[in-house]
Length: 96
Image 1 (cartoon, rainbow, N blue to C red):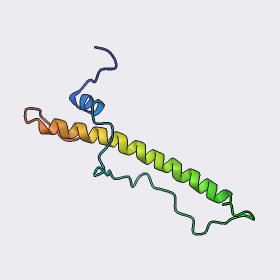
Image 2: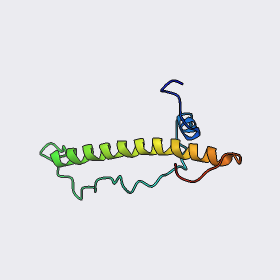
Image 3: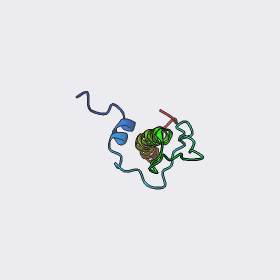
Image 4: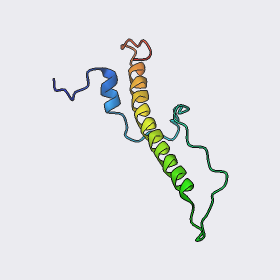
């Protein structure tokens, strides 16, 4: 067996889950909070947002990227769990 082959039914289904999570799949991401929005955006003389806004925007984009990654991988394992549960001949003891 190659080292890239799945070693369990869960891993097989996770590796072969549909690439795009469906819209209804919304895992709990309380552990990945978004930065608190700025109350007031200070603009400079030319109407450009200041450095604090740029830092906030960068933090927000990074947090959104982490949340998107988490949703992608959570979907794959959720899908695998549902597929294993759907086969009545496969014993399932809950979380893996």
